[in-house]
Amino acid sequence: PPSPATVPAEARAVLTIDLDALRSNWRTVRSRLTHAECAAVIKADAYGLGLEQIAGALVAEGCRTVFVATLDEARRVRIVSPALTIYVLDGLLPGAAASYIGFNLRPCLSSLDEIAEWSAAGAERGERLKAALHIDTGMNRLGLTAHDVETLARAWDTFDGFQCTLVMSHLACADVPGHPMNDAQRTRFDELRAKLPPLPASLANSGGTFLDPAFQYDLVRPGIVLFGGRALEGRPNPMRHVVTLKARILQIRDCAPGATVGYGAAYTCDRPTRLATIACGYADGFLRAISRA
Ligand SMILES: *Cc1c(COP(=O)(O)O)cnc(C)c1O
Image (cartoon, rainbow, N blue to C red; front, side):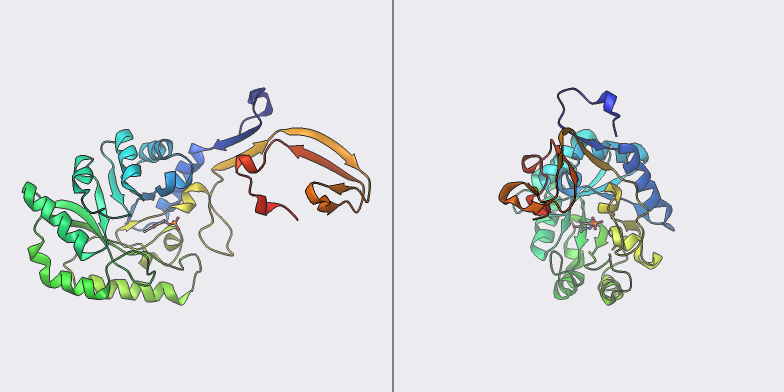
């Protein structure tokens, strides 16, 4: 964070994003892995921290694979990094295959229709287009059903314009160690994977990389921990803070017991109280719900 001397005179609040801490967090996750590749999830504009600068810092640290949510985000990352492997979690939007191909992107395919469309686009070009297969194992958000996987397995050879580079699924309760969903989803993942040819696999999000190493498979997909978030509930957080928000104090006042504070006189001082008014509020993203009243 900047020292007061370096804060411009006109600055109200200063948000600092520490890219060294980000890089250190990525190394911390990587150091936990027995053999898996450490990718990074940078969806939602890198959890709000700016896709381009976060992608650039991770690439500089040696990260080779990222996951974004949208085609739009994928294009932005491609512009800053020609070599990065980029997976799009939204999957293939119908009719948009040419955009994925043009930017060398890999959709995470979640339905037989998406697989058919991607494979047809590859066949038309005489290529096998790379993509991930997303299998649902209990999150019930995105992913192929068990029935889809069986259908796909029977028709595998007909999809000759498609190369599956990763089979993945997403954990619903990875932040709660010992939650029965974790092992249940891992078992389900193994059962469904077994119906397909051997493929590189990925199951762990942030929480998953802090569970048993059996959750690591060939690639892990940490997101929130890279940005300083806690992986496991109720455990110490080994991650470094990436984001710091500091606001200028505009005024300090001393109030006597009984004085009321703020709209609706929502707070009453019960003892002599020194109050600071800071230059940061709702318009700066400081949630109104955080208000004590
Ligand atoms: C968001 C997301 C991740 C990363 O999750 P975190 O809990 O932030 O680590 C991994 N995989 C998928 C499919 C996701 O949607």
